Every structure is written in C-alpha cells, then in structure tokens.
Length: 296
Length: 301
Image 1 (tube, helix red, strand yellow):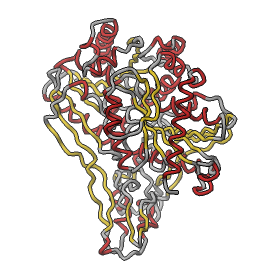
Image 2: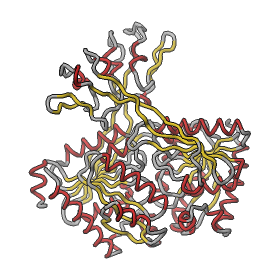
Image 3: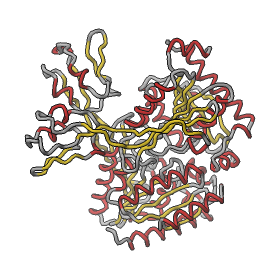
Image 4: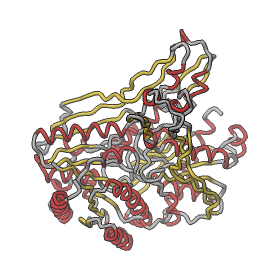
C-alpha cells in the first residue's frame, strides 16, 4: 500500500480537481483522504454518502465558574495569550484567544477554573461514486488542531486501505507549509506538487518543496495553466530539473475544469480530450514512480 | 469618514482584512491592487499575514526599511538544575515535553509558549529562551508601506508570527489611516488571528461550487467573530450564479465583481498590477474602498 500526497503551497492551483480525477482513474483500488480539513471540497465531486460520522475532540478551553471565583486575578496575570479579561468585575475567558494550555486551571487557588474538551470537528467514512471509500472531515470554525484532524483522517484511510488490500491512498493536502501540511506529509511515499506559472505559484512551490525535502520523499510536479506564462513555465521546469523532481505534465489553461466542477464531475468524466489524456498519462507515471520509490 | 476623525478617535488605522475560505481566489490580487490604488492618494500599509506563503511582496519593488527576527519563546532544559521531578511533561498540554530516563526533551515545534513548564518548575530548570522562527520585513514604495513575515520552513505555528506582525504594524503605523491585511486561506486558527481585530473583512471568492462551499464556511467564521463583511466575486462569468444567489438570500453585500479574463490571469502571473490596465477595475476598487470606509461611520468608535 502506497500513500500519495497532493499539495501545492499556493491555493487554487487545481489540487482537488486533479486529485479527484486520479481517484476516478484509480477506481476501487484507491482510498481517498481529503486532508484539506479547513476548506474541504472533495465531497462536491465524489458523491459521498456520509455513511459513518464521528465527533473529533481535541484541545481544551478554560472556563471560569463565577460562583467560586475569589477574583484574585492570578489567572489573568499568568495567561500569555491575553485571553482573560475583567468584565463587570468578573474574570472571563475569551474562547477565541484561549489556547487551551491549562496553565490558569493549574494555578487557580480555589480550583474554580476547569478545562472543557473541545469538539474540534467531525470526520466521516463515506462510500463514493468510484466504488471505493473516502475519509473526510470538517473542522469546526476557527478550531485549532487541524494538524491532528489531518492525522486522524490519514490514519483512518490507511486502516481501510490495509484492511481491504487497496494499493493506494490519495491524500488531498491543504495550502501553505504549516501544521496541516506537515501532518499530511508524514509517512507519504510520493508527493505530487501542483503549481501554476505565476510569480506566486513558483515562489510557493519552492517553499513547499523545501518542506518535502526535509521529509526525504520523492516528488513529481504538474504545471497547471502552463501556457498562461511560458517564460515562467520554463523557469519552473529548470527548477524541477535542478531539484530532481519528476515533471509529470503541462496542463493548458482550460475552463473545462470549472465546467466539470459545476456538474459535480471530474474532468476525466466530463470530457475525453487533451486534458483528460494528460491527466491519465500523469496518473500512470505517478504509479510507476511511487512503486520505484526506494525511500520507504 | 474624514481621515482625521477615525485616527483621532481610534488612534490606529482602519483595518481591512482580505480573506477567503478557499485558496487561490484572488486575496493577494485584491490586496496589492487595492493598496496601490489607495497609495495614489494617501499613505497606506499593506500587511501580508499569510506567513506560510507570503507573496504580496512579489508585486512591488520596495526599499527595505526595516528587518527583524520573529521570535518564539521556548523552554530550554538546564540539566544541572533539574531534579527530574516529572512535573513538566505533566503540565504541558501540547506534548512538547517528554521525559526519557534521566533526560528532558523539548519539542520546540509543538510548544505554544504558555510558560506553564517554565514557571511551575520548582527549581527553574526550564527557563524560556527565544528561538528564531521567521523574519519580519518592512518595505516602502512612495506612499505604500509593505510589511510581511515569513515563517521558516519546518515551523508549524503561524499564529504567533501573525500576532507579532500585527503588533509591529500597530506600533509603527499608528498614524496611517488605512491598513490592509492579506490573510491566509482556510477557516482555522491562522485566519482567526489575521481577521479577529479587523474593522471590516472582504471575503473574495469565485463563482464555482468550490468557491461557494468555502465562502459559506468563511461567512460562518465571520459571523462567529461578529465582523462586518462583504463579498467580492472574482473570475465573474465562469461557473454559475449560485454565489450571487447565496449572497442575496443571506443579505450579504457584493462589493464588486472582477471579470474572468485570461489577460488578468496573465498580468497576475507576471507579478503585475491589474487596475492600471482595466478602468472598470479601478472603478470597482473605488467602490470597495468607499463601502469599507462607510462602515467606519456606522460602527461605534
């Protein structure tokens, strides 16, 4: 069983549309994991049945019981997040600022502060239209710990893939280089970088690839909208060569991606054209490269 | 709003955050164009709070006026003082401290700098020490001041850098009337940190199913934060009209619609501003700014 992670650094380069296309091509042999838990969109293309729903508790929030509070002010003094303020003489925690470190509860002389477990989101195991399964999640608005939810989604997908003897897990990652991305990379066998030839696309690609290098994972790259700026497309290819990243495909600027999306379809279902052919070719290359991978 | 009034009453800039649930919908495009547009008339500060992937700076060639390290405080184990009492791993809610036999291990990436371990340690064996997690840079091009922070690769927590950057801006640019915050994508902690003290939030989206879905999440987030906000539709013309229908049904103001155009995508790709080439976008920027500032009149000081 191999784990393939699709990330991009910059958002909106086509990660999810491309991942969903691979999932359709891979059919029953692929378990999908939507690890962009902040703004998960994969379900819009995969017709999940949300068959199996679970709560995800993570992190804590301080709560001050006013009836026992002696207003000593110690909690406010030690809080490094300025999360406790005095309102009408009462010490109150601002949930948005509280990091859940629990320090205030530990030092409160009357033990009047308690830490409440936070419902940080929900995760689901769904049957999807490819005949396989997808693990996906929804983070509560503004919740912390998205990295942990990503780890949870990946673990569940791994368990399904092992149990049902599937060959691949496809992980749709989130933008950026922070905690959810780090979490989605851990344990991966191959990384697909989806980029676009814009100054931001290249800049973000370089940053996210530095992170991939730290994990010592083999990578390939798809340049989406490659014809929008041929000069920069070339710069990207030079970068790929220098960094020994496999160049998987140049996809042309094409609004069919959006048209397909409005129908709830992936591009490979929507139209049999150049774009679909290029994506099929990429998927074949990825499978070969992933199985060659000597690192894991 | 008269420029002097807002500053006189609030002693800080009117803060407009540009955010979106989905990535790649045009946050940076709108931020840099709006900033350049405002800077034609008056001083403005543009702050890139997407510290994981900051790229507003790719659109300006500014003069570097200030640079400093972004620091995070982490505990450092002092073996000579430690009695191995076992308290520190117990008080750390983030599992950033582990005791392995006669050794205390600190995992700096997991630490949230709450100081519990350092201050509760009976023998002061875990003093807090600064660790460099990124860099803040402040640039200037005429009336445009541009501040960005970038997180070092491998650092996982964006929030502390975002908070620090806002603090720097509040201190240095207290006399500039308008500050624009280019925010990170998503709906989790970094976005909350970037938008929580904004005076107005612009949510930028595209009229597609992904755009609509992530817009609804962003709207939920802003309502939870009780922020006044409006929507800008980017790439208007592709996809469908569900986003506009949603905004109408939810009574959300649509401040502008930026047309879908290959020319715009090409200009953006090359790191160029758009509005100088499109009079209708210049006009839209004017509308957006007027609307944002009109909330200042309505909101209590």
